[in-house]
Amino acid sequence: SPSELATRYRADFPILDICVNDKSLVYLDNAASSQMPQQVIDRLVRYQTAQHANIHRAVHYLSEVATHEYETARRSLQHFINAREDREIIFTSGTTESINLVMHGYGRKFIQQDDEIILTNLEHHSNIVPWQMLAEEKGARIRVVPINDAGELLIDEYEKLFNSRTRFVAITHVSNALGTINPIKNMIAFAHMKGVPVLVDGAQAAAHIKIDVQDLDCDFYAFSAHKMCGPTGVGILYGKAHLLESMQPFKGGGDMIASVTFEKTTYNTIPYKFEAGTPPIAAAIGFGSAIEYLSKIGMDTIAAYEHELLSYATEQLEAMPGVRIIGNTRTKVAVISFTIEGVHPHDVGTLLNQEGIAVRTGHHCAQPIMQRYNIPATSRASFAFYNTKAEVDALVAGIQSVQKVFS
Ligand code: PMP
Image (cartoon, rainbow, N blue to C red; front, top):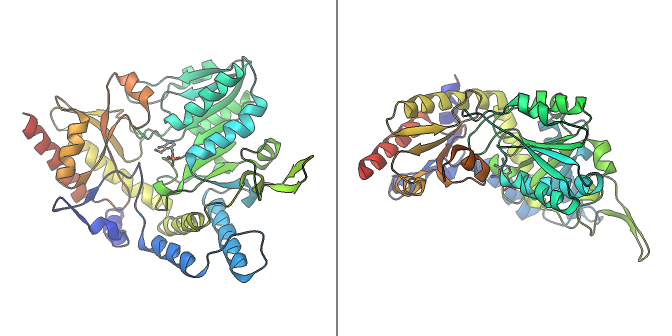
């Protein structure tokens, strides 16, 4: 049964056993970074102990092993999101770099003065700021899809934003601040009907729902390892091969070239054209290991369990006087953003920490969402498949004790 999932896999995560302020850690900050299972930690140790070398150029043993393991990780990512080819997977330092790569590689080449870029009110700053920089440089315009009170995009308004100047759409699959799952498949189909390519920020989706880039038909899809049981410092950009081939490189350096003279440089083929310099080899191999770990459990199994956990938590928080859930839609991943009447979110976070409970408080790098609800900040509990109903109960008890302190 799904409810046994957490108990079954929890033992794989040694960090979940630590105590914080003499209480058992209740880790509910998974949307910022999730934890790594022993299998991934062991994989990193094995690489560092017996396989470490620089990749791609040497003929010696260790370099061949490291290259093989790095390219195997790329294929694990390819299969995880059902990309057509492994050269459509580019290793980056994370979602932020993936989006910046598309802004520089595609945006600076193809977007001109008076062109328009569509974003949504639900974007993380990393899917706003690069596009603003581009708009400023080119004299292009940003258009924004609004949301309703439940935190859902207004799709009619989205469709109305398209005109003959629309050149690009960049939307998040799942909101990091609210948890909303956006109807991206339909949004992509609509954009394509208008001849406009779409980048999807999948940072908050890839750990929680099954991603099939061919089924979605997105042009670009970006996510980070550290939110899905992998290490920091690595992520990917998926891009359709013909688009990646049409783009200019983002960074210049070694490995991204075919030949260099002082007169002229020709670039390597994809994906290497976009992987200048020594990449995060260890982290990429750890990422591959995390993908194998999640795939073994099964993304559908994870999604079903987390949904059960979300319903359980939502029901309890909805019943608490003075607690308001921000963006309380039914189509969500297991994220609950909330406010407590009369208590600043920073105090909520500090007092919960005294109980060993880790939540995030603030604007969640999504200030336009806070502006939309006219609030400075929220507290955010974000769950993973290793969280239990007992931990939801601990959160509820923690909120009650916060309310007592401020009553
Ligand atoms: N987009 C979203 C929706 C996110 O939640 C995050 C991480 N908070 C990012 C982008 C940026 O990811 P990273 O910091 O790993 O580059």
